[in-house]
Image (cartoon, rainbow, N blue to C red; front, side, top):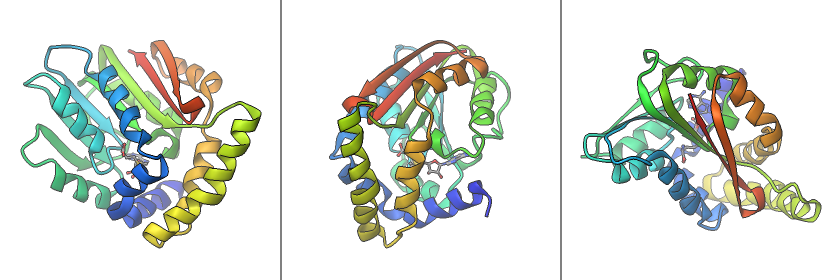
Length: 229
Ligand SMILES: C[S@@+](CC[C@H](N)C(=O)[O-])C[C@H]1O[C@@H](n2cnc3c(N)ncnc32)[C@H](O)[C@@H]1O
């Protein structure tokens, strides 16, 4: 099965329990990481057009919509119909439109958005470079991209504990909560395979971004990248 089809099926399958699993497995820290990323996106008093790529159940899009100036609008896209359907139930009355879509083939004109964010999504892209290039294309010149992604500590002992938690404990929690064992073997594995800043920053540059900065939280368990077109 192609990676993209597998990813779509995986998230369709765990959609209902996804939010709860996130908060439990990160000991609630995902909320504070999201807040930091929201602040990096909403760094202006002016209304902004935002694209939330891999929006999932729209938690991130909702948080952005609550902070952004009146007149702002958020478009959320995701491969998984199941995640989008749950997201829609949470977005009533908010300036958010959710739709299915593929980050690697964005259905928007060049230079459409002031801000683009991807929270915990890029590591699932089948072709990371294609996704980054597409996001650069639909971002307005001077617009900002914020990537929030799970990663791992580089320090030997911390890395050892991290691997124990993510490869042995997370799959057990995930399987117990959702009944899906495969998903929670894939998810930690995809974190370990995703490039560290020394490799990811050059990729952002190659995709056409500049003024790139990287931040790390909880010893590198989560990283945030801010970049400009
Ligand atoms: C871990 S969830 C993150 C959801 C959300 N951004 C959040 O912060 O909770 C990853 C999401 O990425 C989506 N995804 C993976 N590959 C994608 C792609 N190529 N285009 C759009 N969405 C994608 C999955 O369907 C899934 O909903």
